[in-house]
Image 1: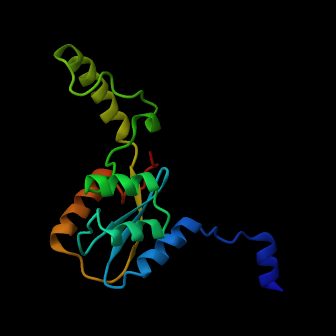
Image 2: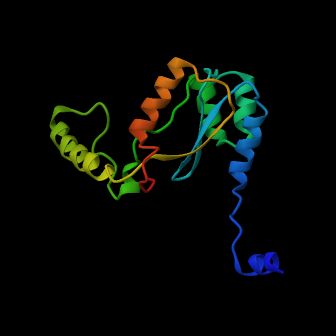
Length: 164
């Protein structure tokens, strides 16, 4: 009776199918360890005990296994590197894109410097991603751990801030 009332009036926590796929894909890598983060547009997964080859077929299959953005998977493979934004996108913190193009001519530098000051001030109120959970029990690689620590510091992943 009580469980029926609980189902009727209570809310069961929503199960995010993307997070389920990430957990399953990571679970198929028993000798690996991962950290999962929520971003403003989805999730980010970092391997913590080894370096993954972004151009390898195994990595492509792993990323595809949890539904990673196909454009991101292709870009990683073609550039032989992983990319993750560490700071908020300007439009997510109500700022326009930076003025001018890179490389900036000297005339545009002062305009960009003013924009950058506004951006840095506005972005202090936001995190780029939020730590969700660790998956796997493999001990972290010391060099990878340093990268993860810097990622978490710059993205403010462990602070209780809104995502941008």
